[in-house]
Image (cartoon, rainbow, N blue to C red; front, side, top):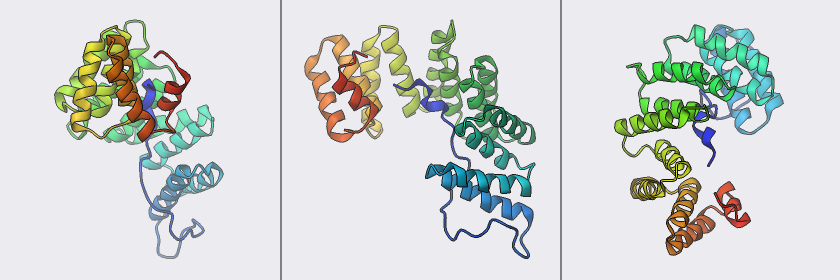
Length: 253
C-alpha cells in the first residue's frame, strides 16, 4: 500500500466553481472576501487538475490577503504540486507561523516536512497537533506521525506505537488500521494483519487497500481460498485500482 497516503496534502477549503468572475475586488467587497473567493476557486481548479488557472487564482488571493494562513497553506499545496519546492516550503512555513494556533494548518505543514524527508521535525509537529485540545481528530495526527517515522532506522517500533495510539482513540480508524496491518505484514505477523482486515471490513466501507492487504495476509498464512475471495472482491469492486493492477501483475507483496 502507499505508506504516504495519510500524508497527502489535503485541500483546506472546499467550494464549487460557480460563476467565475474576474477575481478582482468588487465594489463593497473587502480584500479578505475577495481572497476567500479566489482561494476557493484555486482549490476547485486544483481538484480539476487545472493547475495554470489554479495558480492564477492563488496568486490573486495572495495579493489580496497575503497574511491569511489558509491562503498561505493552500499556496503551499499548489506550489508543491507544481514542483516549485522553494515556494511550497516558503508558504507552508509562513502559514505555520501566522496560523500557529490552528492545528489544521500545523498538521498540513507537518505533512510537508515529512514528505520532504524531515521526519524528526514532522513527527514533533504531528504530536503537538495530536495533543492540541482544539484538534478534533487526534487519531489522524498520530497516524500521520507513524507514517512519517516508519521509514527511519528505528521507525517501525515507534510507528506501531503511534498507530495503536490512534486506534486507542478511535478503535476503527481506517487509515490507522491499514497502516498497522501493512506494518504487521512487513514484520512477518500476518495473523495480526488478518485480524485487522476482518475488523476493518466489519465497520468500514471496503477499499482496494484493505482487500489487497487481505490477499497478502491470507497468502502468507496459506489460506488460498480466503486469498482468492479477497482477490475476486478487489477485481469486482475496484478493477481500476493500483491494487488490482498489482494483483494482475502477480506482485508478491
